[in-house]
Amino acid sequence: MRKTLLVAFAALIAVPAFASHWGPLTYTREAHEELTDLRSALRNVRDPAVRADLLTRIDRVDGLVSSAEGEFREGPPAPAVSFGDARAMVLRETFDDDKLAVIGRLARETRFTTLEAMAIADLCTFETNKADALVALYPAVTDPQRFGLSLDILTFASTRREVESALGL
Image (cartoon, rainbow, N blue to C red; front, side, top):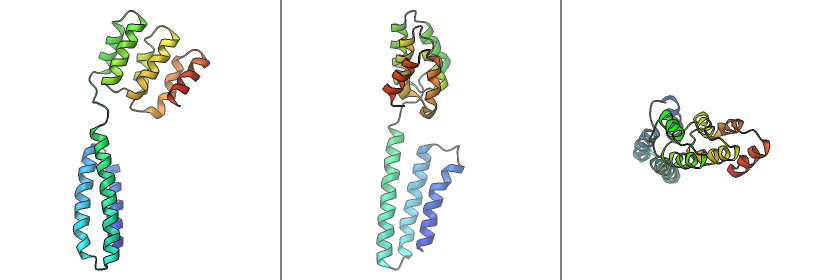
């Protein structure tokens, strides 16, 4: 029975990898349902020590799933504007200080890919302002592992190092 429950845990973890059309909250809901089924299956385990051990593990996984569910619910906001609209909003501003103010607001309200963040930051005229824009946009990036690519818009190696240092890259 223990092997059956362990296989069920493995299946629970593997299912989301094949169901890419589901969202994260669907995964957590499915995980809670599976854990409820596993708790029910524990009635068939005769050894009290094994049953107690499995219940402890199920409870631990349930806690982890609940934590993940909370993170998904409390995650960054959904995109408020499209990339094209965001770009147009920045382009409407003449001066870099005004552009940076718009970029800061956009970074709090929407999400961007690294390439989109790079294009928006590149709308600033001066190198230091481009660097400030990249730092402001980093928390809004959906693919932070690629963010190093955005440093290509910076001309000077010293500015690149400053941004890397500021972001811990």
